[in-house]
View 1: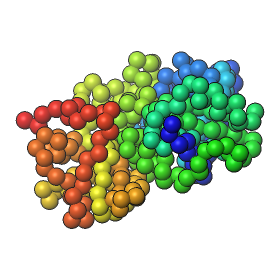
View 2: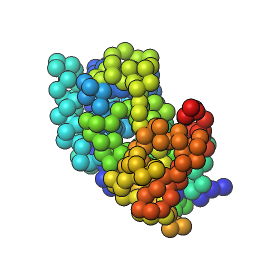
View 3: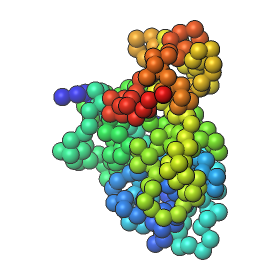
Length: 308
């Protein structure tokens, strides 16, 4: 059986949105369908501008029917509270910053999914102040252990603590964006980041902020670039340019060094350049080094179609 790893999340913060109208309030402004989210489950979602650009991406944990915990990067928490409070009006809800937010990732070293029996056992071994949620974006990302009262202490478990970069490499390899480093505020569109693949947007639900633009980009095929994983022997830091035939076709966003000397990154690349790379083998280059497209096996390159 694969070794279970855990990594503490040090740069996260959360809001608690509670009250009898919390469900409808959040569903009316955020991109995901939260009305069908049962207690004890988590969901990725976004708050958009009226022009359909991402302002904040978030992980939403439904604690009970009238209470949600909303986790974002700690640098975003004040602005997120301010923005969603603008829409509260007279709704019967409370919006509060959780002062003692603690969270950690729990995942298999080989990226395999947790079995239901394993999750039950993990829950039984934690204290009453710690909650466990399955990551709904991809099974490879494992579980989230959450507490708003006490530090998460797993020293008595058989899990191996590793640096957060290990989990980040799983996230990037599975095309999952996170925070401002991947989703430039007020610029990135939902489908440029493939957030429909991670249940962060529902095209069947009613209106939400930015819904019209988001629907138009889907049904009219208006997306011109895409966030994808790439690797390179040269460093791929934030805003490192990537070229194809001496033309700049994209920029790197989040990245991690791999054990073999290469770097893995999410890069926002032009769709026409992606098609040329896949269908015509026209390579990408950065810092004079070849850049390899690293699409996850579950995705499939055939979605890019033909360039002719």
